[in-house]
Amino acid sequence: MEISNKEKATALLTSLETGDKTPIGYINPNKYIQHNLAVSDGLAGFGAVVQNAPEGGFKANVVRSFQDGDYAFTHTIYDFFGPKIGFDVFRFEDGKIVEHWDNLIAIFPANPSGHTQTDGPTKAADLDKTDANKALVSDFIDTILVKGEMDKIGNYIDNEQYTQHNPQIADGLAGLGKALEELGKQGIHMVYTKNHKILGEGNFVLTISEGTFGNQPTSFYDLFRVENGKIVEHWDTIETIIPEAERKNTNGKFNFPS
Image (cartoon, rainbow, N blue to C red; front, side):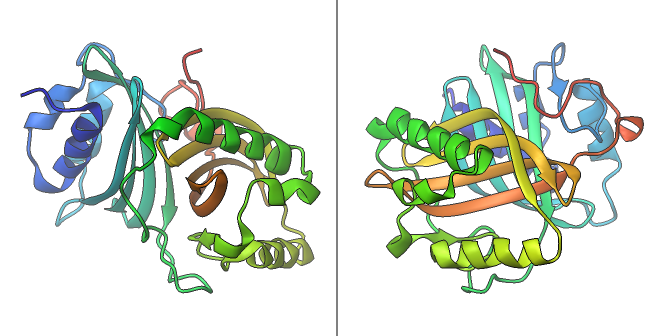
């Protein structure tokens, strides 16, 4: 029985822990473009990571998995050279994985509102609203995060029901405002300059954006849950982009097919 692309992505990540060799067959051996800049290109690069597993191996618990057209995207708790939370994006051609992007962050204690980086709903709903929800989130990224038109934030976020999973930020718009204010006092600014990709399934939408955090080149992966036309929940990973001299491939962090 043919399984879905998101099931293939989940199986591949889970195999990092189980050692099951079957999911390797979901990767196109002749075309596997790697966008994790710390990993060499191709199936050989994936194999090198697996072969260099630390004593005790890797851990990979896929909490959420979704798919949008030829893409599958996952939200995973890792022990991958240290405890991490990661978003992975896979592109498929003819049922095989041909391209991979990801964004990783360390695991932190629960945030000021008691939420972890991965708890909350996991199953997509409102599948008939995928396009509308992607459009809402796309507009939010452009208007609020890129252009900084904060006076319009109420058009996108339900303040009465906004659950935050960023480890530093409390629930609600007040929590977001306080966190940004505290960063500003420290001279740390979070700047979104460009959105590169928006993927969605039903009420879950993932955005992949570029910018700076504390003046360091940064990749922002933001997962939003939408309800009744407003954003009601948010998870994210924020990763500093490694310098060119340290990269093991030249595919770029954000290069998505047009």
